[in-house]
Image 1 (tube, rainbow, N blue to C red):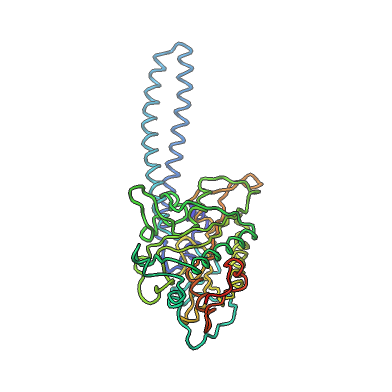
Image 2 (image 1 turned 135 degrees about the vertical axis):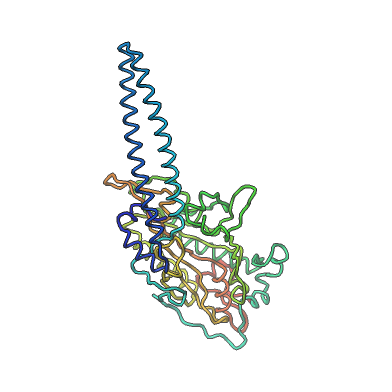
Length: 423
């Protein structure tokens, strides 16, 4: 969430940035600042009372040593009054702090200066495009037909066993899935990311730390009896490793990666755009995460974008990169780049990755700080990216690399698969 310091010192900049999301947060921010002023005033009063109480306690000690018990008892009644007043002020402090935190949680992150003030995905800015559009043969079909023809993915069996959006991968489809995961992990390892296998369930504190709660609880699967949530992305457990942590500047940057299944309810999703692998409730993804110094985070964001570029080029897929406008950006992000791969058989672009810089927004929730070489403590910046999410990658691979007799496997993937074609 936004920091009180930023609202105090840069209120106009924050309001202008939030206007790119088409949000007028002025009333909420004024209320937060008003409560903060009350909180600080209450803290000052509390400090004065505590100082008086300490002074009186020393006086009582001196009077008792001098044998002046009656005078000491008279002063003790004053300290009792001070304790009552202090307790009341502490209650006011806790109430104000809770109100501030609750309201701050409803205000999204302030977009970066370079983010434009669009409203819809059509307003996103294309910053890069690479690869040639495939020219498919006359009998080319979409991936769900290829999956059935070559017995790669069974959507109906998944619906039988669980429900729509939970497919079975089988045979070469399962091997292809595993090969992609290993390729992505190997590339992350070569780029200096440490691999983790994290838990697939998180507690509410972790969901709050990365911004899924209280904003997105309706999109997560909730194990009510244990009050745990199935992870929507590997970002959540990986980033929460550093919740309530004070780092040293020399430890930065921290680079983490992990493969996990991901679970999303996708409530409200329907229509042709969700067919096949286009939108699932359970899917596999390799995630990369960085905890970084604020002065380095945008250079890091660029490096993470380049990392995802390399994966898509290895898979020989045509892609484009979009810098999201304010109205299409996630609640917690300061800047996001989306990668889209062209799906030739569907004749449409499919999102396969988002790479984001959250600046201090998640770090403030996580209470993840570092002590600089100058001795000062400040919040880190957090970043993450899909590298990559598998369903639409598999869809694009099957569709774009199909020919009259089967499906060609990209050269970089063949050693991982153990085959060069699906026939």
